[in-house]
Length: 277
Image 1 (tube, rainbow, N blue to C red):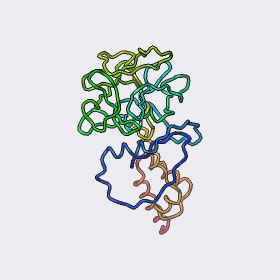
Image 2 (image 1 turned 135 degrees about the vertical axis):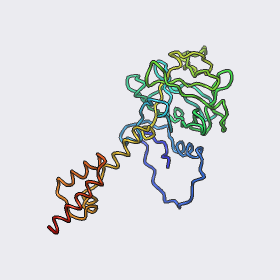
Image 3 (image 1 turned 90 degrees about the vertical axis):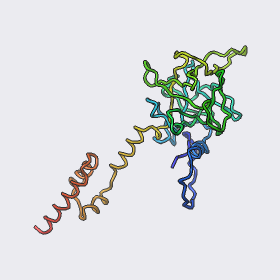
Image 4 (image 1 turned 45 degrees about the vertical axis):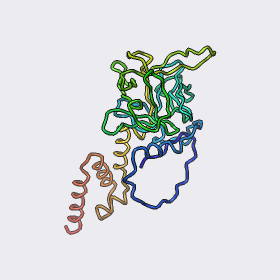
């Protein structure tokens, strides 16, 4: 089941009992909505942070899934954001250490997008906090007002060849998302984002931050550690007798190394021999 997006410092919601019903017909859009439903624009204080809620950098395109943040190549760093009416813009990143993009985390739900592959393709879609999809029109203008997926809402994520850990966001017209200085006459106008760049440049090269629990390697590592955890009483129940300390250690080591069942059988046999020998 997909967990809702949370920020550090959020109060943990109380769990409610639910009746069990068949849910096999729920589609990917429902998953997107669950991930965004309780997202809040709250400041992070780090007191209630867990590994699941921490943010890490995507290393390869196959990492990318679930809530993400696009860290744009601006100075200081900004994130791709959208408001409730679908306007797409750049928003300064407040949760960052020494302006280092690999430490960036969202402080505002408008900076968060839910990334998923489009079924049957290698393309990605990005849903904003308001439930609409990121789109780039034929002249390179971004918006987030669409409720449906068309080629305009479909993107490729391409690793940058000479800069590991960075990506290019490419439209199906083979143009790239880029950021540039604002053309506005207003003082301190934020950088503008466009989708009509035809060449890969510094201005098209960005980083993608994501929640750790969705990163395949970290998820697999966490599941592996969960499998390794077993109590003494569980081991004694499996063997059928009280165990010595060295036997407990031996069985736990066997779980880590993958020969648990063989070791367990040997101990059961040894126990029978000791009993009747």
